[in-house]
Amino acid sequence: MADTENLVPPPPAEAAPLMTPINLILISFFVVMAYLKLRPSPPVTLPKGPAPVVFKTFTPKTLLPNNGTNNQPVYLAVRGKVFDVTPGRNFYGPGGPYQNFAGRDATRGLACGSFDESMLTEDLEGPLDDLKGLGDDEMDALRGWEERFTEKYLAVGKLVPANSEEAKEAGL
Image (cartoon, rainbow, N blue to C red; front, top):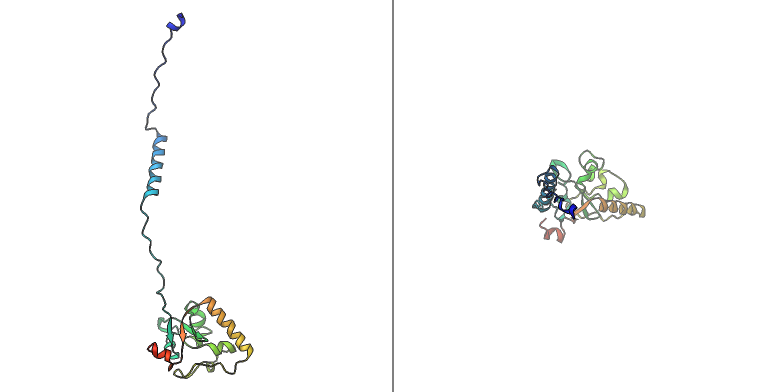
């Protein structure tokens, strides 16, 4: 027992300082993470884009100004449907290879594969083209064009004769 009398108690454990560099880094990291998690999110806003287009009724005369001149959109009609072909302004707008069809009923010209002015309806107050005289090949070509326009462009309206009941109801 003599050996136990000479034993010295161990020194008390030293407390590590709280503000060590690694602790400061960890505390900073947690504060930043908490801020990122709890900060308010910005309000949701709708993307800005072109103004919405309302589906309208057109007559050949009211369709005509939509030919891409004077900053107007470029519309054309195929079998009574009016398409906004403004994204294809290089083709259908002023100076493009299909510019004759801008603001017009392009049905017969597309069916016949002709850009000639004679393919366009001359009497804007008269009836729409009834497509008489077109053969099966022309009708097939027309269906192909119609599908292409339906897939690629937005339909913005319908084309009706100037003196029709629909035109009168639409105030045209």
